[in-house]
Length: 240
Image (cartoon, rainbow, N blue to C red; front, side, top):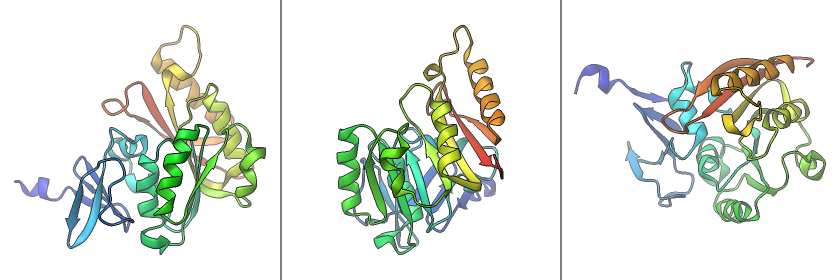
């Protein structure tokens, strides 16, 4: 193995490691996997493999042209995740944000509309303190927004509803703090611009985000992990 290949390991945080095209997070629930992912010990510490083909956030961390650590919230913060699904990305975020027995003091509020997803998230939360599952519609903040008394520094959205850009902009205005980071995962077919090709759809999304006062710092193509998907990393400037 060449010296160049041996140097591809990179610690993105206290709990997340990038090793070439592989991602790992320190297991906050030792000796247990969440979705059948492999477990491995590095220097005596148990990590879980973060599969980027099953996690759009994981895919973005692999594909970003910038420092991938910029896509992670700070450990110990409160964050909001809209469209939490069955908990694949959520579990790795929890590893980083909270750690074992939530020794980092983080709080991960994860909202999903599907009762089946909520059951999976509730089961996950039983062994992962700091993870808060919420059954709710991402559009209807009034039903669950009371759980977010303060604005957050990190927001992720991956919802399977029409009008995702509008939902994201409203969520950023309502919940994202000034200078906070918002990540929007979007599938081209989910936005209805008749006659536009995929590239134009994503270009229109970027224009809409900028017009809403959000600075698009990177548009990350997830092709190869999630085809027809783009992840937009934005920063909320002051007074939008």
